[in-house]
Image (cartoon, rainbow, N blue to C red; front, top):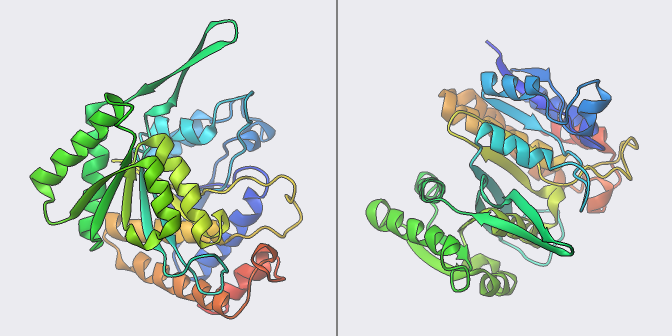
Amino acid sequence: MSTNVVLIPGDGIGPEVAVATQRVLDAAGADLKWTIRHAGEAALLAGEKSLLPQSTIDLISEYGVALKGPCTTPIGTGFRSVNVSLRKCLDLFAAIRPIRSMAGVKSRYSEVDLVIVRENTEGLYGGIESEIAKGVCTSTKVATEAASRRIADYAFRYCRERSRRKLSVFHKANILKLTDGLFIRCAREIHDAHYPDIEYEEVIIDAGCMKMVQDPKRFDVILAENLYGDIMSDLCAGLVGGLGVTPGSNIGEKGAVFEAVHGSAPDIAGKGIANPLALIMSGVMMLNWLSTQRGEPKFGACATRIRRAYDRALTDGATTRDLGGSLNTLEFADAIIARL
């Protein structure tokens, strides 16, 4: 039987890269039954009354898995991030961002292979802000022991299951002694009690950023609270060619949402030139997750075929304009399909 998956095309270039991704996953024989639901500005254009309709949340909860294109978030004004709201509503507490060098993609570094594990539900992204006086605003950072221990255990388990050698916790506990202090204390206790076989270190985040750009190969898996994890995810994406070649996932105890982490790029929307690779790679992560969660090896086999195919396409120089090539969105998808 086909596996039900919610597809959220998103805004801007989202629908274009979503179609290309569907084409690749279907051609690989993934046997998915796609149901489209909307979020972001696209939801309002579709006649919904909110940016994140309850029907979208309910169906993701029912199916347990979704693939999502980029959604627009205004800067400084306007509505709250749809991505943040989605993670909160579904309790998708772990954001996973693999970062690896890819043949055929020019970057300043080679042989980068690391993973960012980001706590996804609290910290400053709780959005608890207030104007306490004219021209004076505050923002409250929330850290709980339950969430800190949960994400630490997930990160260590991720290392063990994937034979990763080291976990580095990025923090600012030298200044934020209560919130970040709690975060690293929980990570340390989880390590000592359950994962002593995994190498563990604590890195002050500003020094960690310097070490990252000096030699990213010194890191393996990085654990960080919400804001630091967000910043480090984009910084590390820059090591391997940018957000266009970086997938992402948001994992909870009852389901997961896989997404392209780049923006909606409204300036090129509708032109058919967007690079769909990030969403295709996120689709591969989704298939691997389905293989593990549903106990069906066919998904893992499809994921491997797609990954080998896009690696081969990039090596052969079959790329979109942002990577120095000439292919449009669907031509790049077809180039992957031709190499399955």
